[in-house]
Image 1 (spheres, rainbow, N blue to C red):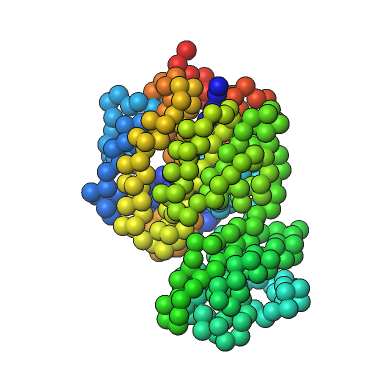
Image 2: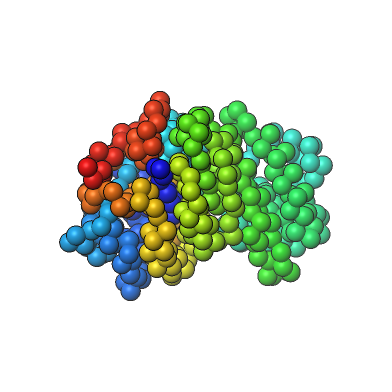
Length: 389
């Protein structure tokens, strides 16, 4: 019974891509720069699989003489650096055109239609930090009962509202309305509900965030489902893929919950894919430039990695990777255009350097190869390199 457990550490990049200058991301290197700022950071279990053996990584993270896993890094071929683009490329899609961004806020045609359909005014409509804008405009939101609209360097239309003013179900309906508006040339990657609570001067976002993505073209997930296998999604994977190709799912509240749910799926008996997103690196630490919090979260995952491996069955293959960078050491609070790392393990795989791959989609091709599925997706399988035969 063949199965792959694919875990995405959201935002954990491993060095700027050659075209990073186009995105103003020169100098970004999430994993390396955090280690420079927090030298006591130890990722012994990830390094035992080969993390420190990845090209340009061994000078800071421990290089293992006899790593237990396979390792390498992958370049992003698609245009963009957002969550949707990264995950879609991991599952076999290469996007030639990036999703639209709005550095000056959304145009009147969008805002006016939003107001007409929701019968609400709009506050904000600027690029902003989510934690800052709710404290800047929170009082006015309470007074007017109008939602706060904001964006970032990424392709997102974010709607923030106090749960006592616009409850979560109402907010989700408002987001669904926005999603219907944002099509064509204005088809942003995600509409995001950002509920918050608290009082003046101390507003805080809740765990009731919800992403409203666009439905992707056919991905690896659809091929797996069509072959009567399971696609078990953990975290925001279901939202990123708009439920397409997913056979069962569980939403999570934080990384700890995501790891726990992943282990539960590993303990189940089914063939196919477990697909997990651990979002705290990006959402809580990367976007807030919280270097120490980011480092602590990496150590937490590293300490839980033996439990994940212990839960694996004999034919399971584990792949740990990322979807983009989100370097908390730079002035930017946005995603960064970076390579992503890859480390993996299986009882029937061997230790090997898979090198620097040309696209994230090599992950999709490798999973399809292992599961015996033929696809028409992008990417080149590296399964023959890791197979211990």
